[in-house]
Image (cartoon, rainbow, N blue to C red; front, side):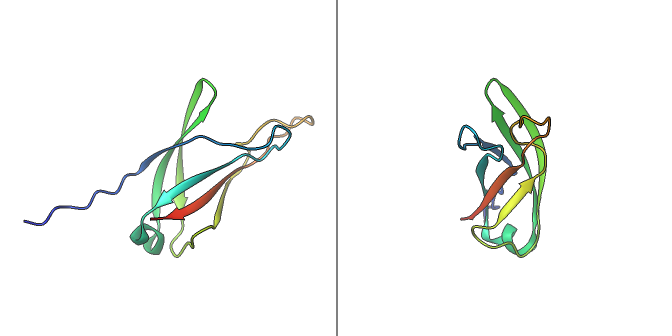
Length: 92
């Protein structure tokens, strides 16, 4: 009997970045098949004691090292705006 492949849609991301940089970054992992066909991932972003859950759409044909930008999910800047959270794509 053939075993069904499991594709994990939920990922936990711990953003990192410089103290004064409003755009933290993290890494999202997709399989080779997901990179070719595109997929939707649930991303749990840890901010200190908070956990935030987001749906991220990975477009078809994405390449290793590409960046996905989640607008206004970064750190606060002095002018009342928010930076962007950048997710680097890693293909396994």
